[in-house]
Amino acid sequence: MSQYQDTIARLQSQGVHSVLVQFCDIHGVAKGKLVPLTNLREWVEQGAGFAGPSIWGTGLPRFGARSEYYARIQVQSLQPLPFMPGVAHAVGDGFAGGQPLDTCSRQLLQAAIERIKSRGWTLWVGIEPEFFLLRQGADGAWKVGDTHDQLDKPSYDLKAIQRNQGFLEEMRSTLTELGFELQQIDHEDACGQYEINYKFDDALVAADRYMLFKLTAHAVAQKHGLVFSAMAKPLAHAPGSGLHFHLSITDAQGKALFADASGSLGLSALGHQFAAGLLDHGDALSALCAPTVNSYKRLALSHSASGTTWSPVWKAYGDNNRTCLLRAVAGRLEWRLPDASCNVYAAIAATLLAGLDGVDRALQAPEPCDEDLYERFASGAPMPARLPRDLFDALGALEQDAVLRGLLGHSFCEQFLRLKREEWDQYQQHVSAWELDRYADGF
Image (tube, rainbow, N blue to C red; front, side, top):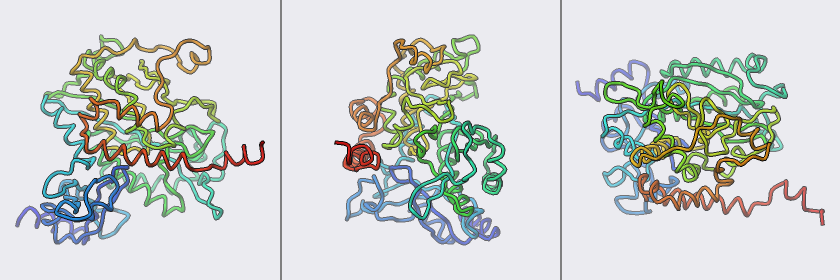
């Protein structure tokens, strides 16, 4: 039997008849279709076909050989979906005209990984998904899904965990069945907010897993009458949802290259250079790691209803310092800029390339921060440079950062900047309820 026949037989023995081919658009939103398992060879070698212009950010024309977007199944990703009986999930790579598509964010990440593989290195990424459980009322208003979740300081609230045990237990069992190695589940710092942590992996697998995590969470939440929300900050007076990346690099022998017990912050010279690259490109990285208008409501110096905020506003790094953009901990780097609305492939790719640029140029990071930056700000003392205050400024920073755009690829960046500027223009033209309440009869 061929490789495909073996795989087909194995999945059919588990009751699978169809494959959900999943990829994501430039916004990081999962897309795909169902195809017959029996035609697996076609889906792997040619790909499942889609009308290219119907997908955000492909840049493909409306006619001709390159108007079709083909998602080629990665065989190793095939596995049955517990919440879709008879269906196996598969990750797809974007192709057009028989060539890898340069606007496909998964292809973008693979190209970035090749740069580090050529050095004999591997990037490991641990992703921390934070999210809200919401409901939309009959009046269209969005509310916290658990109406009893109202504590002033709700972090680690066990009563909320007990009330939402049905959702959390189904997430635990489903993710475990899908091969996630879970580490912890907790109620986060906002009402209705949770975090589910699982083991780190190499960069590409980590990104694929996060997409599968979101697919699972949407399905399980809907089953329990809830909405899984990856919006950065759905509640005005509460903390937002981050998607922190824990970053480390090993060499071919498995040695951790960022770690040095005798070094400042427990980091090696390479670790400091990588950190310097992230801080140097921080403004441009904001566009890709915090890619929505709402993202900058999270990245703001606002008071939190819980009395605590960890918003990474200033371009600084320190030893286990959560008030900094970059936190050094246990010989690795925690990149605190990304939020849950980012395209995880593009965000990891840009983060890796920015860090490698710091290594290649032997950049020197600023002096480590050993104080609470929020207390320092309140005292009126001089502060480190701030990240962009809104999406408009972040997009401008990306456009001005020719080095990062060149490393990422101009085709992807051109599509991303165009669509995100349109998003910003639509936001600017919108008249909000806040504006009406403040100005309608105020003059």
